[in-house]
Length: 169
Image 1 (cartoon, rainbow, N blue to C red):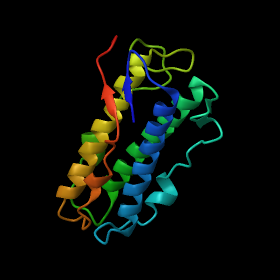
Image 2 (cartoon, rainbow, N blue to C red):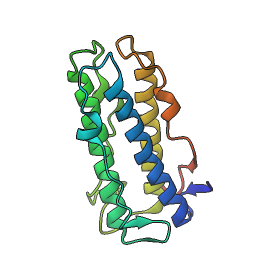
Image 3 (cartoon, rainbow, N blue to C red):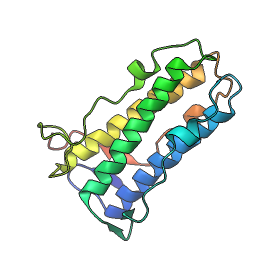
Image 4 (cartoon, rainbow, N blue to C red):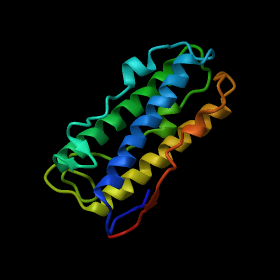
């Protein structure tokens, strides 16, 4: 995959990256469902996302709003998964949501945020890096947790791309 940076990106690279984000989230949800140390077994059913291939594909992205809607859904489901881990009776570790939650806001017009009526590409790139980092924090914590039996969460990190942040912040 080519670089994704604030000064330019290819549409197919962005679609590949967004697809990867969805694939890796589904992979860790699947691991949680099958993990014997985790009580809840409905992570995929509850927090999984069907990637919107009819509106986001390498041959065409219907609108910037479709990208932001996907990212907001991904963020919401990621945070909900972390919150569910905080409440899972099989896991004694806490602070999943407070440790790994993505606090960046989508769809507000405040400077630095992504919103439907216009987004700065560098803000999108920085947001994608935030997602990569938060996901890595989660997978490292899951691998280190004594109650979670599957120790391969980090193999599902979102790492197949080069994100160059800090451009035109």
